[in-house]
Length: 66
Length: 262
Image (cartoon, rainbow over all chains, first blue to last red; front, side, top):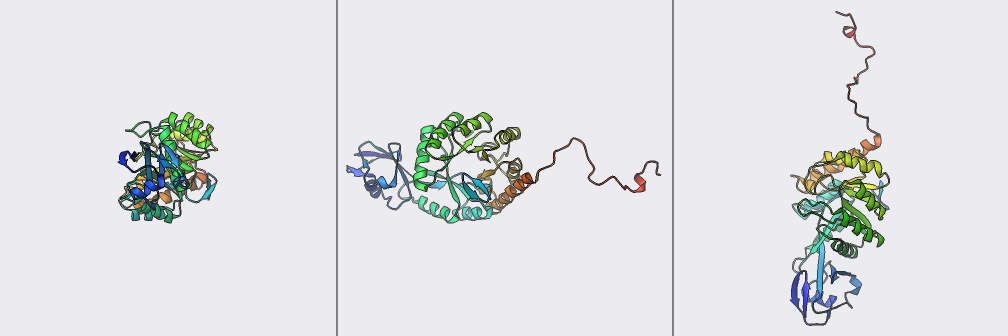
């Protein structure tokens, strides 16, 4: 399946969860927030939330800001 | 000590965390400033970068309250999603709301800001809205649930200081219950002192410290400036006069000032 991650399409073996996808991408133990199709997903839902073909995911981390 | 959104804090300086020469300089600047509130943003990160973890570790060590922002958001929807993600990540209901209306001037979109503030306040956020010095917009923000208003002094990062003193004074006079924080455009410590002398509760400074030749000393200077400004405000300042008034007493002047003396 094709999933758009931070603006770029990536191919994955589906179905998977947000947790599985973060693992695959190398985000394990990263301090990040995740949105699925423009909805913020609480961390406790990462294990169960399924990612589908053509979904859009944003992975955001803390950054310096004013 | 003073109260900011139900939390007791000491400093009246909020410090932005961007554009410092290094994370170490940022850390030393935060300490030298005496600030209790630092701002942070959210950005995309690739798995290989992993800079977010390190940055977050630096910030946590400061012990400051974290004020996440929605910088760069151009719509209500983007700002609300960013606020939700910030709350999830930083475990705080504080959000510095920025809905930018013009990419060149970074002027806030007042309509989008009020709408986003309405939604976020109804969801339990403590919204710190970045706005202009317009009284009506500030009143609308208060009416939708904001307790804090953050008007600009001048455009973000411009260092021009308080460009419209009268408008800022009007906000202070007309909104005595609101917590007022000058957000943008402060370029030097005297600008910060000026805002505090006017009765503003605090200022948020970033670029003026980060781009100084010596950011750590500048951070210290800003810490001292807000303290001086606030003390001056609390002490009650004299009203300016159009005429000179001798400060030395006129009674007992020596003989050569007396009429008819030669």
